Length: 119
Image (cartoon, rainbow, N blue to C red):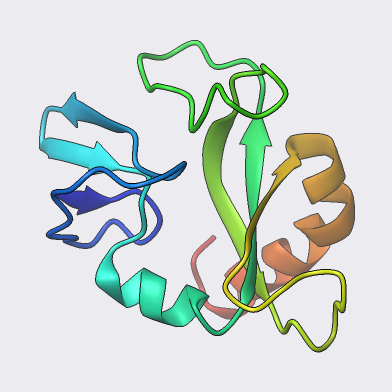
């Protein structure tokens, strides 16, 4: 299986909670639940995932349960130190709509991508 977040192998096979939607792609099954490497990193942080409400492809929403809206992950996410944001808990996963996510984190992500040479 392939991790949606890092595109690495995940080995996750059991259904569990919100982040566990699966679908087949040409190169294998992609899942929203983080792989063990991502889960270990995320466990120390408060993770915020960027989501959108409209998606034209065949990817399923991350969840229908939240406020009745289907949220589709874009793949962009940030991990925050929970001590820096007291309203978020260590190991928590929050969803933030694209416009708000872009407003809070867009410039930061673009700078990091440029610094890492991943333009």
